[in-house]
Image (cartoon, rainbow, N blue to C red; front, side, top):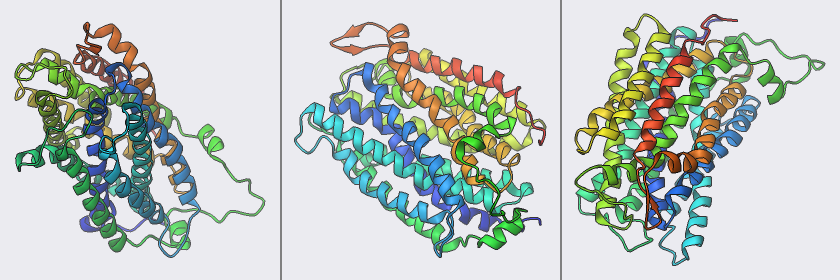
Length: 444
């Protein structure tokens, strides 16, 4: 039976909580390197802290997907995991930016920050995954691209707010400079504000969305009741039986997320040194913290570029051409940062990077869910998240080694030339653009 056609506002409500979750994710993405550098982390080891978020995503999201496929209770099917994830996230968001304020040693502060980061990403992943699953569960194939586009819009709007929060708090007079080893108040208050918005958005979706009961879900997803003798499929079995599109899109995902991990890790240090008005590698200086605020502004520009490009993507007649072109534009944006020394000219670079981000948010999930049945939707989306997490783990582990090769000299224990890592990111996106043409769009 065909799933019912949903109104715009029904699809909006399905994903609105994603707005709050993405604010939390944006605060993490834009400020983690800044926080750990402020606490005393060395640039060569900075990327190691980025292993934790995708590692937890690889562990948590397949489990949440598989468990929620079997969860039916009065609160819903996916929503219970959304509530638990959001609750843990708001607690951790209050603790993480205070890692340098508890009078601990540098090593203890870094360890505490790493644990909080691990818990934050675990909870964000737990809160994020149900939104993707509910769209897959309740939206028909004709509307799925539109529904994921709405989710992408809310995602980028949330990113815009999260990225700008530190700059906004600095603008209204909150201190953006703190004693050595202490995270500035402008960043700390950004996390507090993000936590409040997160819980309000999640409660809104929880109140507005009513998930189907098991009978309706089976009816609308054309699932026959399992017999007692039918073997149960575990995650490994599902992975073996995954459609070809799962692996083909996964290869594109590898190059794409490899690139963006380097952006999140090295943008602050790269522009702090490369932009002429700051020209510093001193992480406790006002110039470095100003570059950290500007990183949030640039990431917000990226979000704007993503929103605008998302409106252009439906105009392409060929999906793969739209996908590949987006990644090429993003590659140009990354590579151009190496040659730009003006803070405002970097807007052009990050608008182009936003084109790649728009395609990465909408196209992979729309392509994949159309090749899946509803029976194990959550499990497959959880497994597919590994194609996002694994490249970030690889990039985190090799980031220091690559920086040693492409970066400049070491000055007072700090590696210069971090902007070159954004060039490496651009090259990775070019490989991803080539891989797009290997994706099969035929239904198996």
